[in-house]
Length: 427
Image (cartoon, rainbow, N blue to C red):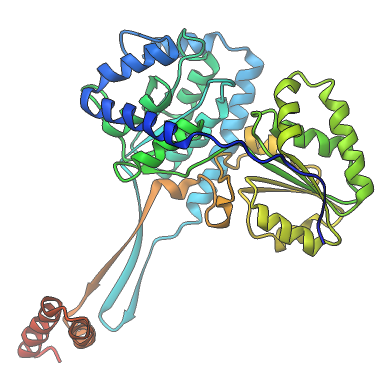
């Protein structure tokens, strides 16, 4: 039976009513007053009041020129990997048409949404690769118009690497505006700012609540909370690597859960000691220490089946398996956002440059959904067409079932076809 060596503290409750009301007020204001309201909130929250929130090509070129060449090369490498994987996803989605009965043809098509908005957070950390994950994925899906949206960095325009990442990803428009007001502007639009059909991308609790409230007015990708990681280890693991991976996600924020599931108490203790040691050296230890102290957990399990059951119960955003039999877990795990199989893979690769998408489900949402991918920007639609012979095969059954449901009008549409096509000698 699973035994906890370290348990997370009870999660402090957030005044969700205050968050809901704040978000609702901003969204309603932007819906009525448009850019004027956006400008007011931008001044209030970001100290940002430009002549226009739209970024022009001159700003993009200046941003690119200011970036270190090594960073540019790494951004281009990551761009290529993310694009390649997104194309593979798109190629895996097949359209078809089949004759399911004589004269009855049923088909499936994948149609891109016509516009998408990609929100890229940039408050505490400028999330450069989030632009690639959302904008580039949408472009590979075939979305004709993609708007990239990010807050100003320290009140003085967009962080150069962020801006260039958006441009490199293929954004058709880039707006420098942040927070709830950015999502409201993308959803409702304003003169000069056309609304979008779907909004994607991560953000804080206010951004997540804005997506929740805007859903219906626009589509959304998913609702994401604090970053999560769960690492499974056995006696073959390297405690230095396991500890580094736990802290690599804990640094996201003071409420980010980091969980160690170990098949060995000895290894669990070694990883815990290593976490404490690395925290004395980590530049972001001020954040990571709080996250590990308050939301870190260490669990000892008796065997790998118990480890899988526990992992599926956590349904973590990020899951790493650092065991001698890591491939077995790939075949048996059921609930995670993304999985790193073996020590050689790490969530940092996934977050930055390996190609898979890092916008993923949190808060146990991995029980019922995966993360952002090409298919999120595509509408899988169906169609049907019939010959008259095919219609006469289906119509009698449709009429009987309509009668059983007391839908006289439905039944009539079927029987009128029976009458017409039988008279025409189609039987």
